[in-house]
Image (tube, rainbow, N blue to C red; front, side):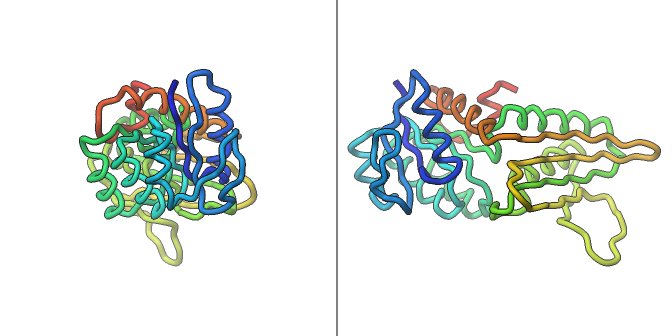
Length: 254
């Protein structure tokens, strides 16, 4: 039985992940953390204050901590979990280079971690597709458009940022610009555009535009369950993974 702890337990993704864990026969929810609604009953356990993580980790001894919170909060959660030997599945986005370095140091040779800006199986196949397409469309203009719900805090999305890096790497390095305004002559860059509105779960479009033709590769998430299903796969995988940081590509073997 895999013992699971979840941070941001009362949030949209946190509560969905908890519901999924409760439905899995090989998983047990042993801890739930949040900065609000402390003491609330979720899945048969009470929500703990994240400030009490040390005490809870010591008592409950989870195998995996799942974190879909905020960048600043996630860094502290990663450091605390790693100190207690708790493996990690991190879906939080918006990390600065400094925060990424802090997590790498905390995780190194202590625990196994899967860190990804998107746990959807479809998105990870989407990344593979755009990387292959870029290799064969080297002289095409590239634009990325991502659309998310009005409550998403970071822009562009982690998925769009990762998409740009994959394409840039495939093309030997291209600069990225974010939106355009005024007199903006099109150069040899990758454009990223963020749209926010309504309750859109997550749409990502990569446009390869050439002379006389264009190709669009699109992924649309209709439900957050797409992310939760991938997270369940990551939880099962990480408990037997090598120590260090891994990606969803490692989990899926692609």
